[in-house]
Length: 177
Image (cartoon, rainbow, N blue to C red):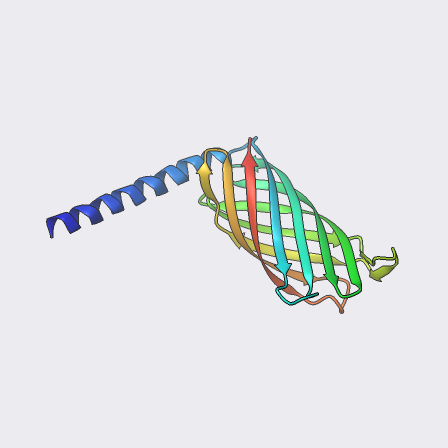
C-alpha cells in the first residue's frame, strides 16, 4: 500500500512539474516581439479502396506577437483532391488574429480566400471562394521553442452557397523565435 501511495505521489508531482514547466515555456514563446512559423495539415485522406479518393491539405502559417499571447497571423496553403478522372488543385491565402489563453490554448479568427480549383486539363473546376474561420486547440511544447498544436477549425463560406461550411481537425508544428 505504501508503494502504491508513493507511486501516485511521484506521478502527481511529475505531472505538476511538467504542467508548470509547460506554462513557463509557453509564456516565453508567446511574448511580445517573438515570431512564429508553422506547418499544418487540415486533412490527409488516403482511401484504402482501389482507385478511391486521395486528398491532401497542407499550409504554412506565420505571425508576430504584438502583445503577450496575441499575434497577427498570415497563412498560405495547398489543397489537392484526386478521384477517378477528377484532379483538383487549389491555393489558399489568408490573415487573422491568434490569442493564446493561458499561453497554451490558441484561439484564432481569420479570413481565408482561394484561387479556385483547376482540373487536370488546367480548366477551372470550382471558382474562387472565401471563408471566415474560427479555431481552438492546445499548444504542447515538447521542446523550448517548438509546439505541436492539435486543433479544431470551423470554416464558413462567405460568398458561395455551393461551398459547404466545414469542421476540420488539424495538427500544426510551430517554431517560435
